[in-house]
Amino acid sequence: MKQMRGYKGPVVMVFLLTVLGGWHFMDTRTGAFASGNLWLGTIYGWLFFFAMVFLLILAAGLFWKKWPLEVCGALAVCFFGSMYLIALPPLSAPDEISHFASAYGISNVFLGESPVDEKGYVRMRLEDEFLQNVNGASGMEERVSLGRTLTEKTWEEIRAHAAGGFVSPERKEMVSSVLKPVKTTPVSYVPQALGITFARLLGVNCIILAYLGRFFNLLFFAGMIYGAKKVLPFGKMTVCGVSVLPMSLHLAASCSYDAFIMGMCFFFGSYCLYLAFAKPVVQKRDVVLLALLAAAFGPCKMVYAVLLGFALLIPVKKFGGWKNWGISAAVVAAAFLAAMILVNRETISDYAVGADTYVSWAGEEGFSIPYILHNPRVYVRMMYETLVHQGDEWALSMLGESLGNLDPVLSVPFFVLVFLAACLALLGIRRAGEALYLSGWQKAWILFLAFSCLAGLMTAMMVGWTPLSSGVIEGVQGRYLLPMLPFVIMTMKNDRLVRTAGSDEKLFFYMCVLDCYGALRLFSIVSMRL
View (cartoon, one colour):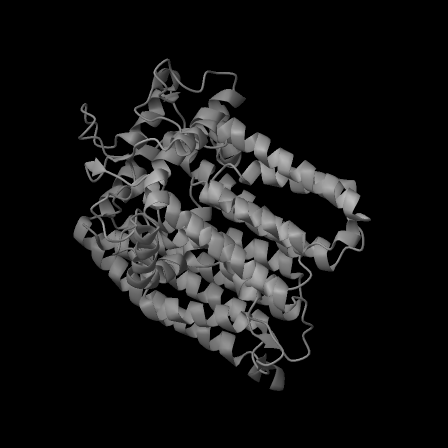
């Protein structure tokens, strides 16, 4: 009985999920009856069933079998990421259609075909054109991609087009799309491209193809989470907690390269902490791995290059002296710079010469690097006003507000976001008897890197997305802050604030229960949007 009382919290959470899951089933059934698509209720029923099964498996692993945290974390990402993959259909994540097209181009390369046509548009099967033009419009302005706005009709289109499963030979003919690949490192699209390639080899239709591209991206993210927690000497649960936030799962279960960025940043930072605090000597293979990671994720979004600063936490003595440290630093820096120049030389050139910017969405001139250098007071004021007016929005959207294509209706409820934030905060508090690893200057350095990353993001969006008439910096989103979040939480641990109750495993389980609730509710919302 005493043992059961120790798990009262998890049992209560699962009970509440059961009640709320039944409540939202009624909503889904109402929408299904109104539209005549009763099969939506069946999908919801299976989603709810698998949610409960996943939670039982996770509970067994966390509380009874005592599986390693890296195993529990990776399984949680796969399980609950799959729920978000289903609840929010293909191409519904921010800019996912562009990322899908980029991954498709890499798939073409894998299959020995030209990735784009002579005008730079991605080539794809005639069958897959449906994803970029669900309404069959001939004009560019009228075209609508699947998932741009999620409604019950989206599920109708998916069900109708997925019927049959396989594609006829004439539908496999390659044609030019209306999409161009994103200008970034092609490595960030390899996981999605592998899923798309597998689907093309099987000859399945575009719906299954899109799901497989997303699923392979989710598997990659789960693998990075496993690796990060495998090497981390401390703070494993903070990475677990951030990886199962609704926004993290939504991005991981999409074709977005944000999953690649998050996963690589988590692993790079974790590996640096492993070398700094756990491994006695840094070997050549460690330096090669750091160089490969820097070359892979550095050019994807240049502002995340500040994470290379985590390598400075590694003591010089572990390299065998300053000479070996200098050589190692040069190897990592050279790999990063070579990849950066190869991928982003045009962007770097534009910034260097201070090219004029034109913000197309606003139809007016934008800020430039020379303008900022000549008007530092304007720059500082814009940074301050943006933090004051948008900071709360970033925090909520980072957790899971406005999912889909930044759709405010597709949001995890505010009270759930507060509960998730509370769980993350508690995971950042030192437990009684827990060893402290980070010193004061190391915490300050990590926070400096986080602030530098935020400042870089704001500067980049000020130059690339903000019109001169704006009083705040436009385009910064909370999801951009996720790669640094677990490391910022790690700096909270100190010897003055100690948590004496509530295990990390229970807090993580609570977050997973809330993930299930969020996914179920999102499915019911989409089902009712007629």
